[in-house]
Amino acid sequence: MVEVNVLKTQMCPHCPRATAVAKKVASELGGVQVKETYLDTDPAGQEIAVKHEVMSVPTILINDRVAFVGVPNESALRKAIEEAQ
Amino acid sequence: MIATDVEDFPGFPKGVKGPELTRLMREQVERFVEKIADVDVSTVDFSKRPFKVVAENKTYLAKVVIVATGASAKWLGLPNEKRLIGKGVSSCAVCDGWFFKGKHIAVIGGGDTALREALYLANVTGGVTVVHRRSELRAQEVLQKRAFADKRIKFVWNATVDDILGKDRVDGLKLKDVKTGKASELKVDGVFVAIGHTPNTGFLPKQMLDEKGFVAIKGGVPGHSSTSVPGVFAAGDVYDYTYMQAVTAAAGGCIAAQDAHRFLEAEKGGD
Image 1 (cartoon, rainbow over the protein chains, first blue to last red):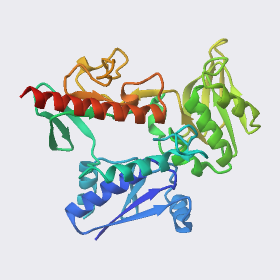
Image 2 (cartoon, helix red, strand yellow):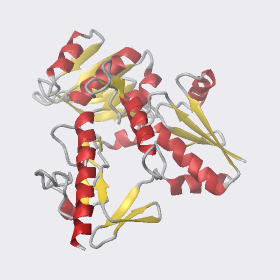
Image 3 (cartoon, chains in turn yellow, green):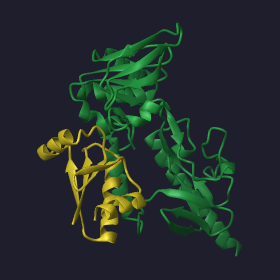
Image 4 (spheres, one colour):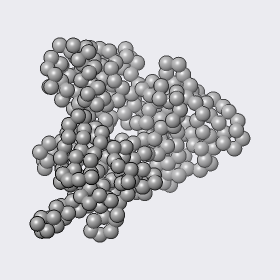
């Protein structure tokens, strides 16, 4: 199971799109779990931000490694997930 | 929509956050449309009908098209700017401001967006320096007054950014005084670029665009939103570089929808 974690903040206007792309690709591929973490309000999120030195959202982690900063397009995300599978 | 506080949208007497307004609009749209595809359009073929819109390896066919792809933040175009995006370089204060709690940051620009970003960031960071290439701001007066009254916001006038400094993350800016040519360094932990917008029209045929790259529209009533291609309409910042307000873009959407509807009705009548 590949874990895709969409890191976001409450006010970020681009972040819902990143989640939508991740969920769509996950449903097409199978074997992918999509999580969302708010870095600004979730205490665990703040730890993740420090650990990965995140300074911009959306950031997408695949299996706990930074894979994308910004909203990826579907094909790029699909390729990155397939490589992690 | 990246704007922080939208103060002038009808129906929100206390103002509304830009992302919240977008979320509400999407929720409203979902009541009326069958499907929203969150995809990036790569190319279009408007040479014959049905029109073709290609997005992420899928082709969508349409009798009419409304282009409302808006405009994106312009970047300075410096090599180190690209390298440091996500490492202290940003163009979205509401997205990334939180990461600069207690840190000193710079905002580049002198228009409405720059001051909105500076005013928002003054609340969430340790201090803001606005760097502007002229000796006065282009922003509307109300924003200027608020920014000048805010002790957390400083200004560097007549300066351009020659380079963004930092190995793994931003640690400063190299500035140049446009009058004296003198170079200086400004120590900052982050930089927000707010120097204007470029229309998102890269996927459109050149002949549909004006000299600035915005969609050229015919104007007039009705048919205000018509482009040079019959059956293709435009709404919002993708053609409007004058008003660029949430409320004018929303009105543009309504106008384009009505123009598209009229166009289809007229075609039916002509059968």
